[in-house]
Image 1 (cartoon, rainbow, N blue to C red):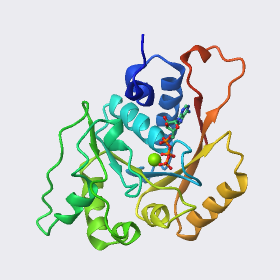
Image 2 (image 1 turned 30 degrees about the vertical axis):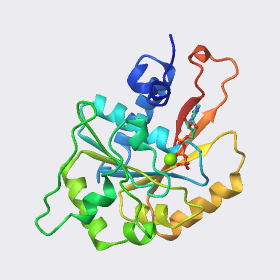
Image 3 (image 1 turned 90 degrees about the vertical axis):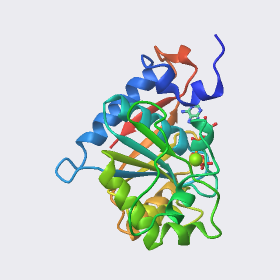
Image 4 (image 1 turned 135 degrees about the vertical axis):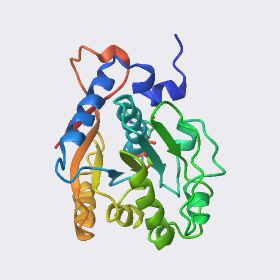
Amino acid sequence: MAIETNDYQLYVKHYPNSAVSEAFRMLRTNLLLTNIDRGLNSLVVTSADRGEGKSTICANLAVIMAQAEKKVLLLDCDLRLPSQGNLFDIATDVGVTTMVGSFGDDRTVEIPEEVMPGLTVIGSGPPPPNPSEFLGSNKFRAFLEHMEKSYDTVIVDAPPVGLVTDAAVLSALVDGTVLVLDAQSGLRNLALQAKASLEKVNANLIGVILNNVRQERNLYSYYHYRGYQGEE
Ligand SMILES: Nc1ncnc2c1ncn2[C@@H]1O[C@H](COP(=O)(O)OP(=O)(O)OP(=O)(O)O)[C@@H](O)[C@H]1O
Ligand SMILES: [Mg+2]
């Protein structure tokens, strides 16, 4: 059986009985039990560097949350290098930027169709001239607050912390921030710097996801997928 790119990237949707899906279910449980009193309505997923697996993790987490009958919104706020449009095969000419642009005082917003029961994905839309300024604007904040009220969970895909301020700006707006670490990258210093940058904006850093963990003697290695592991 050939594995399509999207099957592979949206692993939990296509392979619900895999070890990877089980790891995502564990992550879901951990997140639902985090901030149990205040609730964790919105979440930013970021990392120290490019390519550590943020977008893939956001997409799979969004699917697994929706499978638990949560009303989930996935927002692609990596306005510089968006991925969710391609991952979910949705229109890329509309998205966060166009929706925020037309988000007026009447608070009406045209929500795209769900990509699966319980999951709405909004891609980035055309890039704005200054993404950090866009994400720091009052209009974006109002849009995000509106979305937080409309969904059980809002998952925000973001650029890395190290390169631009976007992720720090976003982290200050949401309930919690998760840092993805590529276990093979060895960029421990960069990860510590990322953590420090997030702490500077008083982000609520709720955990680290260690991605790309090599499992030498793994019962499930025939899935040809490097495992995800949740970590507090
Ligand atoms: N655990 C994994 N095993 C195998 N491939 C992975 C894994 N995690 C991510 N990838 C692959 O690595 C690439 C980068 O992943 P992804 O786009 O999710 O990273 P990112 O952190 O969002 O990158 P960027 O900083 O560019 O937005 C993708 O091709 C993705 O399919
Ligand atoms: Mg990405």
